[in-house]
Image (cartoon, rainbow, N blue to C red; front, side):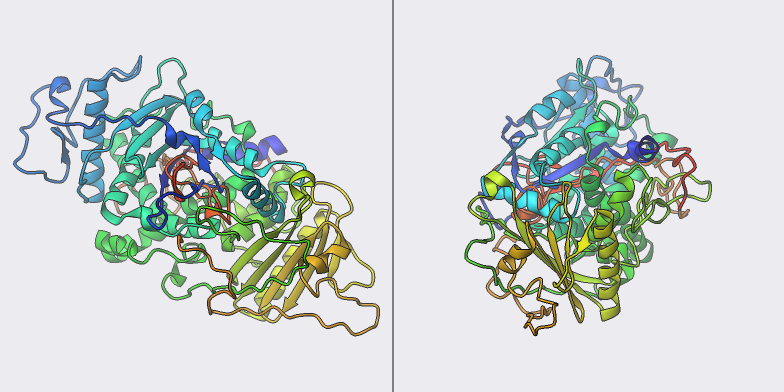
Length: 613
């Protein structure tokens, strides 16, 4: 059954990324897709060549059209978008061929999106082996602890596993290409090891990310947590994947394109992918295109362009597009009440020391046991709830995942602080306080219900004489948990033992043996945090919703890779969103976010081999 579930998502694993460095920090730690640290990939020598003159002239076939006066849409560096060129990529592309393919692809991106490039971006093609060798992250002890706590809190990576290594494995396996704003260059990852070959669909995706950065300064976006990274990617990746679908459709119908020569995911190493982390970062690629398409239908490209000035503030706003601009998330306040032995690990270089996962992250957390068990167990959210199927019974390639659950739909804000002791680096015994805010008391109660079922699945047992306190006796999540539901706020406290819960958070695990105990109540507020500043940095051939717009029925071949946020590897320290490099792409040299455009070419027939929820 596990293999059947793996087959369902096998075609989703190849992604392309945009690594960006927020303008707010000139030389901080890089943000990775799901990691909070920088990638040494960004340190590789840039392909400093830019194109000039008539790039298509040496390879033109037939009678090419004349070059225009000026620089109109659909023409770049001597290449028209519909121009025929003679290119042989059997042994890779030489410089002349690469220049022509890049220039023509730029012209095609312009034609599809109706936006003009300001300048040309150098492009390099590398093998996956080369990419893996360079796609490692620079990190610190505190950032490693931060990442470990963050993903342990999501009940996805246990105490016996290094979360940073897990994220590195995802990056090396799933990134199909990336754009680095800091270096102003594009890298396309090829599965061919002997003569890396260009994939024009991946190239077009990264060229569009470069165009976005030139026109809308993506590097200035605050994406310092996983939630903010995914939220901003609602427009970045939503627009990118919509353009990609239209580009792919033109390749299928009228253009001669250098299409992928291998099955998506082939050679990427799907077996090494941690799909829990992958599902969290994939949300913008699933919900973003539909979000952007709705705006385009109502307001055209001008309406889409305007969203860059006011990007989505939460994943809730792309999961539920009607909430965009109408339901801003609560700025969750937090007061540290821990004992002297427990502290929040400080992350340097302007990265934040907390994490945020949002509605998308919480929904994925509740679904993950279903996937991890191969569908044998569905303690909270089942396959049919999380996967979107077409009427024909196949997994949707346009919007494959459903991040809406009755346990998480009322999300209004969250913030998670890791706690460590002086010995945590050696023992990996840590704790956390995760405060969540909900639209109503009923929504908060729904989340408590779902979270309770999740703890029960992992073997949690109620603790005698301690209210709302549970202990998981063994396994990767063996710890003590306290769940405080007060009004619209739910606060989760974790520690290695029941006794240490109140040391991590004063009042946690209150005595329930009959005596009176004062338990501090957690309240949400829209005011700035209590001294906890966030830092200055901040297709297959069908769409599930047919439309008359061109390209909406295009092939699902985006190239995007979700990048890390929170401190380079997750939430807290730039939320692991990548900065100029893949991160699930990250770059060294400054906090940034990884922008990824997901490549969803799933030929996923016969998806769950009979198991249905």
